[in-house]
View 1 (cartoon, one colour):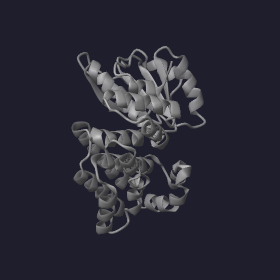
View 2 (cartoon, helix red, strand yellow; view 1 turned 30 degrees about the vertical axis):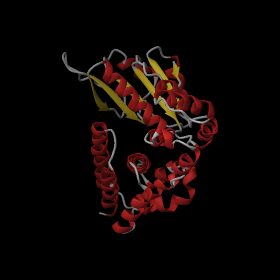
View 3 (cartoon, rainbow, N blue to C red; view 1 turned 90 degrees about the vertical axis):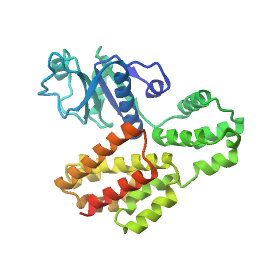
View 4 (spheres, one colour; view 1 turned 45 degrees about the vertical axis):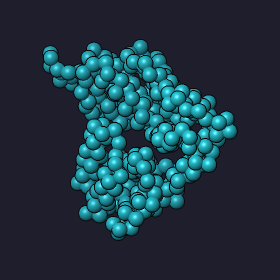
Length: 312
């Protein structure tokens, strides 16, 4: 079975029913959004706990008679094949596997398409038709009135990466209806949006310079969350790379200008620092689930915490 990720996000009544999910593609923010959505929808249905899985080759179901069902999530999980899926098929638990596109994912995708208990969700940048669907749902849900010229401008200007598109829509939602016009929206969508990822590239600067850049670029809670997703991506790249060569291969091509800087950052990390960075991400994610977003103050604290770990 294969599902369209945009259909999942737009369907308020979506109810996940499969045991195995394979979320793949090359749009990392949409992959993360779909994984979070699946977990939230399962939690609405029943009581479940979250757990991580690194391989399914030797998986042992430790659930007791009265234990809560678990959702196991695994990034780049090893041992995904028909034989190993059959070994865990009778488990009461749910398994969500996340892996970006690579030569070996094609075979795995075919397994999940054909498996009756499985589901493939391929995540790529939002195309024009999907962007129109998302925008229409946003306008309808928030009961907004938007001029036709502004509508088509949004279709063209909104980011093709999901989390940044969503953040822009949240900014528009915060504007009073009378102020939703082309002039204000143009101003809103060009607030140095591409520069929020640049905050990660100033980690080696002095704290007062980082704080100054942060205050110039981050004005709203949506800005904070956008910066957070950028930083989380770069941090996960460091944590999940086993060595410098693997890290270099995993750096996205569009960051060719920043490759040297990113390699310099990676060289500062050892196993102990990676564990500290992982703890920081875990505690921040826990805070996000509780508070539904970072404040301006907590966003700056998060950024400075990354710096502290990096240079320690």
